[in-house]
Length: 200
Image 1 (cartoon, helix red, strand yellow):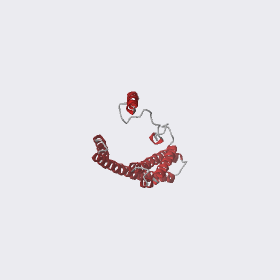
Image 2 (tube, rainbow, N blue to C red):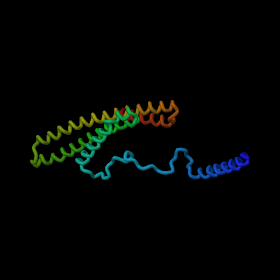
Image 3 (cartoon, rainbow, N blue to C red):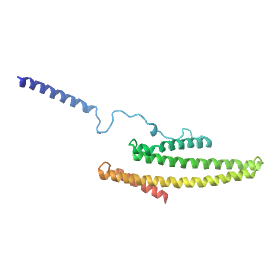
Image 4 (cartoon, rainbow, N blue to C red):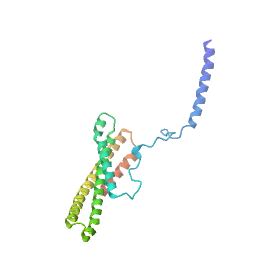
């Protein structure tokens, strides 16, 4: 008696599973990892570029100072977050690299502003509105900011080179473990070669 009931139930269950399997591939894409819905835009994916290119140099410097402070705050706790497993090592390195890049941008913006001030003060000296000592002080500030910008540029080149080397080592390890593709390693090698070529 049980066999008589079990046979129709088994056939009915098999038919339902077959119908359900036929309907689901229509909703899936060809790629196994593709999403049907688009994820929301994250704040970190947005560009930090200003919307208008006609900002005053003082505003640009103030914006870069705020950006540098924000980057320093983000990088300050990154090592601790890595140790407790919240952040990946890559994210920690990226946060530290962002601080170096912000310092470089700020140094260049301060240098540009100081040069503009010197250019603006030269006619004022000729008109007698300011003294030559004030102009010389501004020129001295330009020299100091030029040196600071050169130091920041060297620090940025060094940090980007170190990050590229670490990324290459990471991609090679992942390829060895089978988690990365050869194209990832090739891309990392190209990036490192590009940075070394720029340095030379």
